[in-house]
Image 1 (cartoon, helix red, strand yellow):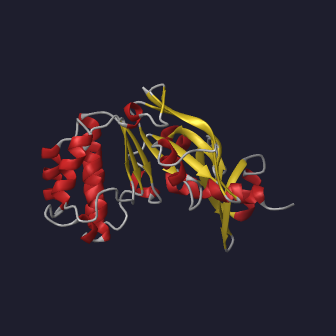
Image 2 (cartoon, rainbow, N blue to C red):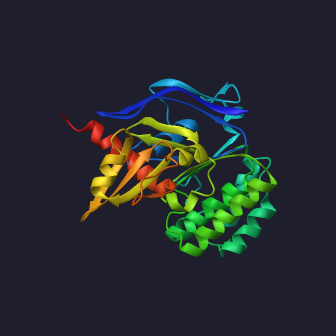
Image 3 (cartoon, rainbow, N blue to C red):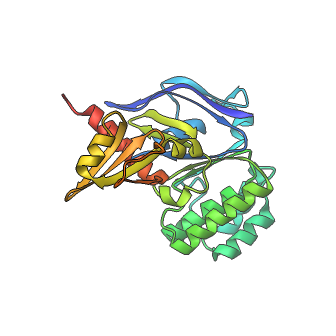
Length: 289
């Protein structure tokens, strides 16, 4: 079981939102989909779920194209900002409606999660605050039980307590009923310990597509006196460099040497630090000579 994106391209006017993107999303992983604003994350998720058609390429779910294919689309559920329920529909009725469309939707679980989050069942969806509108969509995603669940900025408007609750519930669900999860988010530090595979987009193209642990094992930072750092990094692949006074910190692609010169310090990079460094490296490459 897998989702395959085959050479997906999409343009909006003069903007190339996606450019020949090919991906395979395997069963039983939690993917982190990362990228700056305008990188193409939401466009990619919309094409995955056939809410938007690509200009070129196709999406296959378990070998079937998603275009106009209810069987394939029934395996996907996208948690995004858009509300597809009638404006006067209340939360409780929306859960019942979702259960009629998705045969494995757990109505009892939805009510349980609503109570845990403090989501009022008798309130109209359109009258929910930004935070509770996000919670409503999260409860749907955590209760739908499709093989593939896609979250687009899932914790928009949520306070720290509710964000933490969502992440804990997601891990609990994944542990009990393994599925394929894709999380598109700007809050990289919050999902670093959740996602086991990271996809980084920039300007509609894939910068990285690899297991998160593999990415982290092959990057590190070196800091110390600027002159020493410069000598150490002469033959290294530098992602980013920052100086403060006479000190310098450089992010490096590769693995640290065992005999580091005295006076230099090596530190492990977080996924967020790696993402920022990768973006800075890409920006330098794009600068005119």
